[in-house]
Length: 372
Image 1 (cartoon, one colour):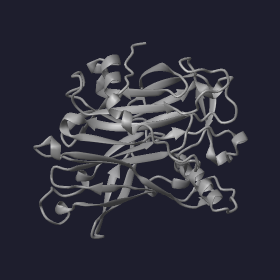
Image 2: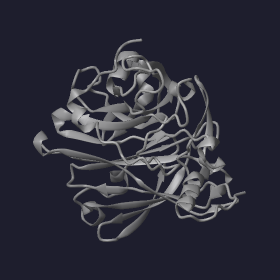
Image 3: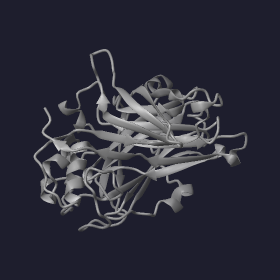
Image 4: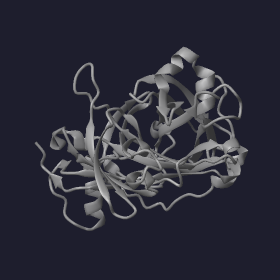
């Protein structure tokens, strides 16, 4: 295997905060989990093969389980099988890397793409944002530790972080990354809080990031009884956007666990959204988010910047209710997993005046119901 996994010393000071250990199942809550997920990456096409230049996405994984049984430092504890997928979920390339107790693995997606893929192979990863071409997709990971003979109880031993950086241009943003938790029935997970996944290491039972699992967790947290329903009547994403000036951008990557296919030749998932500004003005728009990974550019639903009215909007939020679609929500769509992020940037002639922010998007679930 080509060694493209690098330790990024510039990030070392940011890697040592671990969130509370109380887990809210079905949420990408910041607790140790089993299988990391990089729900999106964004890499500058123009500078892919130029070292150290251009936008890159970094993924950092920490092993926090420590020494277990006879496992010692410096001796392989487990392996991570990773898969790079395009925005339609098609597999592009995969490989495996080992890790040891208390290890830190730092991965540059730019290095992966430049090392493993030719230029023609990269075309399936291309998207255009604000007139510039990027490579995008996502990465999922399978953790061999799940079936390792030394483990007892929960297999949750990893936490993860993602960074979107272009240091020469003054952009560096990060947030914690979701990690699927071990969700076996023996650990107390309700059937609606787990799904099975066949992997190279056997069948896993993992928490889903979907409506029914979230609803079950919410009711349990409140000490309320659980109804028998296996669907929910609504699920919302609630992203924030901010536009400092006409050079600023807010891009919202939306990851889901499946493509929305209406025929063998077309992808379609029209979604009616409500866009609010900071003064509580609102307008309705329809966007299309048919793939597993979709990029929503707030500029595409606003008039040209500087034209007055909505063209002068500086910030606000968006109501994305998945029940407000042409699809039938209760026919299985509510079992789709959803994650989203708000990536905000400001640019100017001076890199020292540039900045970027990456935040997870809040989500809201409706009521459990029987479905149809």
